[in-house]
Structures are given as C-alpha cells and as structure tokens.
Image (cartoon, rainbow, N blue to C red; front, side):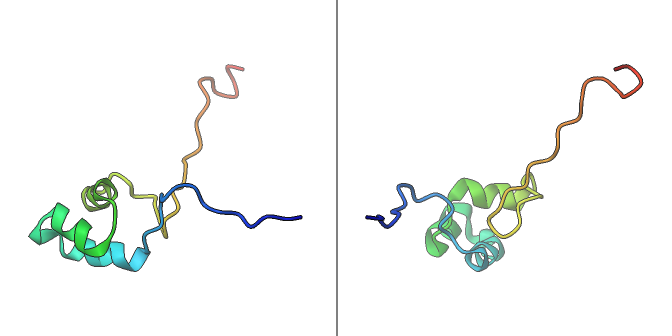
Length: 74
C-alpha cells in the first residue's frame, strides 16, 4: 500500500509574491514586515541586502565550483 508523503519541515513554504510585498514594506522594519507577510526574517534580510542574488522563485541556485588547477597544469 502506498502512503501519502507528509512534509516534516516548514522550510520554504512562503510565497514569492509575499516576499516581494515584504521587501517593499521593509521601511517599517524587518521584523514587522516578516511577521505581517509570513516570511522568514533572515531570508527577508538576505533578499534586501542582496547577498542571495541567485535565488529566484524560492529556489537557490548553486554556482559551479572552479577547479584548483587549470587544464594546462593538470
């Protein structure tokens, strides 16, 4: 018998539209905006200061790692 999957964590359940609204309302304070729109405080701060520039639509994109040696050195 197949069981229905039940999510165990509450991570990334916020909506992208609510995040954009919270970013616009940051002038009233980070905590207030995060609480009013139901988005995580630290995610909101990272979006506002621009450290998470690659995150689009709740998906974090990982950059590829560069090798230590160049092709010629290998």
